[in-house]
Amino acid sequence: MQIILLSGGSGKRLWPLSNDVRSKQFIKMLKDDRGELESMVMRVYRQIVEAVPYAQVTIATGKKQVSSIKNQLGDRVRICVEPERRDTFPAISLAAAYLKDVEGVGEQEPVLVCPVDPYVEAEYFQVMKRLGELAAEGEADLFLMGMEPTYPSEKYGYIIPGSNDPVSFVRAFREKPDLETAKHYLDQGALWNGGVFACKLEYLLEKAHQQMDFATYKDLYNNYSKAPKISFDYAVVEKEANVRVLRYAGEWKDLGTWNTFTEAMGGNTLGKVVMDETCYNTNVINELNIPILCMGCKDMVIAASGDGVLISDKGQSSYIKPFVDKMEQQVMYAEKSWGSFTVLDVQEESLVIRIVLLPGHSLYYHSHEHRDEVWTVMSGKGRVILDGEERSVGPGDVITMPAGCKHTVFAETELKINEVQLGRDITVEDKVKYEL
Image (cartoon, rainbow, N blue to C red; front, side, top):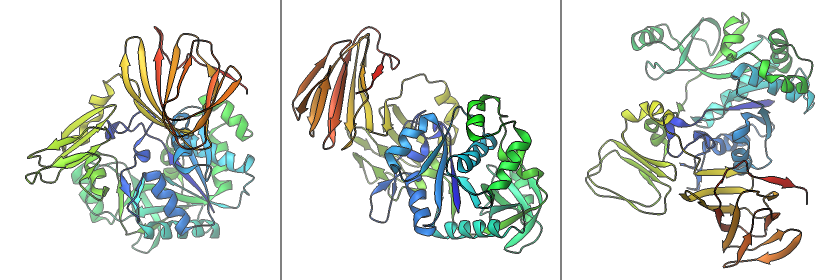
């Protein structure tokens, strides 16, 4: 069975821990069975491996998220990268063409598509496995997973099943309603549409070819800007006559806001936090290396990172996006395939960054035209190459690279480096890459 995980989103509702590079699914705030922190993408992948070890996982995502995925999952998953953001129908179509033309997957093989970030337990993946089995049996063209609602929600679309059977034909689809309409849907036995479905690969390819003119995966990739911006639900699901829905009655949460995300934290605080005994129903997440003291805080979420500080009533935190949209600032923290970087200080003609380089990884061999750089090794061991000359480095070593100097660093152990950039025109575009 093939599983396509859809990884999108800008992460603005979980600012300041999320940004344009680190979406909500990459924030390490959840605890695994050993009490270690993991992100939603790490949790979902772990759960899939435990429940369906024979499944092949492909993550469909945009360019900005590739580094975070590789940082957290390594090379354990395939990644199908969208050249640009278009919506779920072209993204799924591109992934289907990738499976056929790049990975050589047979068209009769079942494919299961689901979001990368649901908060669920093991039962969800057993139902997901059953969904894939139904698709393989082929009694319908398309099988959906319908979540049994726990309350009348205005956040989700609804599936109206034709019966109360575990597997039923679909009578109708309904868009996200207002509260009173949602209550009416629940009276009809409606299910939440969680965006999870299964079918055979040939079905996805057929639907893609019906609405887009392409011959191969490479052809679709190269002409992706011409693909329609439309969701898979609108383009396919709601037009399909031969569709069934499989019920899921277990826990299912969309951790899309601070209010819901804090419910899954497994504790009230992360990081350097002190709360007095008068605090109540308050969660504090601190990524800064300074303490946060909370006194008398009730029904609040407080989050601090290099990108900013949020102090909000939990209910009000759901309305954060319009305010974040108005903010213009550079990304202060990002995970990369080789490690991570954190911006420590920004001045008019200087920038200080903390680089964490994972063992066995290196930076590109590169130079800068408009800035000088100075590296100070804080911890770890590695090797640097400056204009073709190599030497070992360790804690306390200082490496100076004037503009035009070709340089890179290799980490033998985890390597922490403070990088000072000096110049009047410090930009990410000022980089020339070379082959070693």
